[in-house]
Image 1 (cartoon, rainbow, N blue to C red):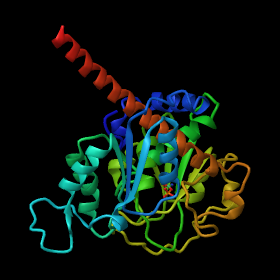
Image 2 (image 1 turned 90 degrees about the vertical axis):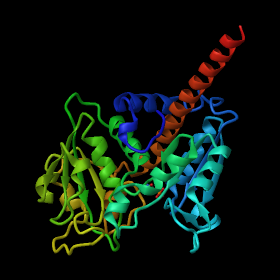
Image 3 (image 1 turned 90 degrees about the horizontal axis):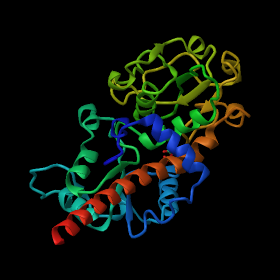
Image 4 (image 1 turned 180 degrees about the vertical axis):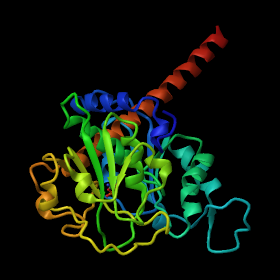
Length: 332
Ligand code: CP
């Protein structure tokens, strides 16, 4: 795996999930793999889970970690090429990324969307510019459109909790919120679920359709109760409108997931990526329910980050071994 920014960076997602489950049982089996390697984590937005789980995962592999809140602690970055920098930006991403790449062997970046410019957000400009100029593997810590570490942790959690031969019914349900949130988590969850061995349904009010680049293969159901029927896993998440980009079209019906709606499911496991607004998105009774997997998902963020870093480190050491082999061959 060169970069990890989407499921398409993973050659075999099922194999990666199996590898993650094995790694979870033997978390210190590769405690020296990352020796003398540095992970740089740069954040343009807040984080609790991503920030801490990725650091923990890297340290379990023996890596050094550097963390920077790029938006607050560094110079104002110019992300556009071919500009005269006579405004507020102080340092071009071309220069900053090259410096970061010289300090770090792998770089992770969190960069949320603006939610005001769909074309720009969906071009993943910030992530693309970092990858273009840093010269080392890049991990998305949640980009404008995707959150692959979260989705990998979610996929690991579903696999851990499904023992039947039958495909589980997985339902992603839109939930209310007080502010406009990105589409990255639901896009990413859809991207992963449509490629795994599950029956996948998305339910949301009219006006909240996701970008169909990510939802191809999913069933879309506008009636939440209908969608929840016989669900084995229910993933609750808010997102803002994609078509009326970043808006929150009014929803008259009650979409908050609660015990009454839960009764339609097949004693489903409840999932949410966190942070969650209790009694707005999801009832406290369900968050704390015996069938809630919410804390397990957060725990699995460590395993997800660890298996991604392990694969990158293996690839690097393979490359380095090859370089050494060639040098030895030239010398002989
Ligand atoms: N789920 C998730 O990414 O959490 P943080 O925003 O706290 O990292």
